[in-house]
Length: 334
Ligand code: TYM
Image 1 (cartoon, rainbow, N blue to C red):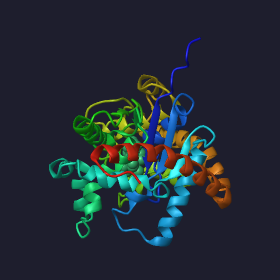
Image 2 (cartoon, rainbow, N blue to C red):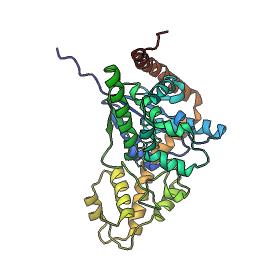
Image 3 (spheres, rainbow, N blue to C red):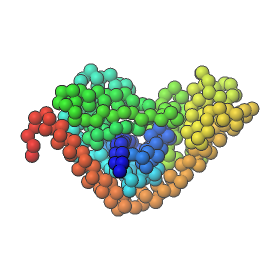
Image 4 (cartoon, protein in one colour):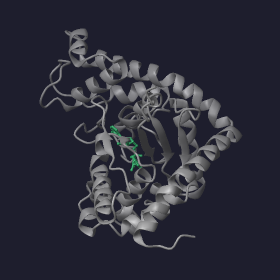
């Protein structure tokens, strides 16, 4: 009898930063949902990562719970996957400290996100912001993850996680699995609707730059109608057409149509019609998610049951990896 092939392990996480954008959804969350049937999936709300910028306690608590409920609404299924809140599993912070000691100052200094965020929060360039990628490496390595589904903006952090794992394994022998990035071809880089050379980000001060999964239909319509385009009137992928390229990318990710099919469909039509169609497709996509979110967020007990159940199992799995790494370094077992 053939032994069934062991399912590969997937890990990914999202920060509870208040708003979950269409970028998060198309670049990451939607893929997580699809991967659940074929992989051993482990997902987390990365609340420890979020305190690298100042959080207001009441709002922070709300954001964490909202992110948890919204991911369930997107289709993360706790019957199939583990889905917990990062700070509930103490091994993450512990391994992060260990990995900090195997991560070089120079490597962390080169991280684009660190450079961007330290400009943005110049009054609070804290050590956590700097060491953020080693916490992310800990998240991933604790579960011996084979693959990490993320948007393109996280690629550099993932490469660092791989380097840390290889370095540690090089010194102590095989301890961590070296993870591969999983970056989908559609939706991996959803751009700002106001400056389509920049990624869509919830931290953008211009609220018209991003669409939130929980935005009301008329808000979504308004934001797409205001999207920056170009002076031509041709719906096609092309150089110097960043705005339209982005809208075609979103349309393609949401409807499954190719860019050629979209170009054909909108031949002879103006940008106004196209923007309305993209908005309508997005509204249609998020509608059932919004309805499920409204149900989940009312049921705090159910949410607590789910995140506690997953955290308990995650702790057991991750503790084994942490213990192994600590033992290799020479710490004395408890
Ligand atoms: P975060 O919370 O910024 O984003 C969550 C996921 O959304 C993707 N994403 C995008 N994809 C396409 N277009 C965009 N405009 C866009 N904006 C965001 C991100 O690539 C990400 O996949 N550090 C991580 C969270 C994290 C993590 C981890 C991820 C913590 N530990 C371990 C993977 C593995 C972050 O801040 O993602």
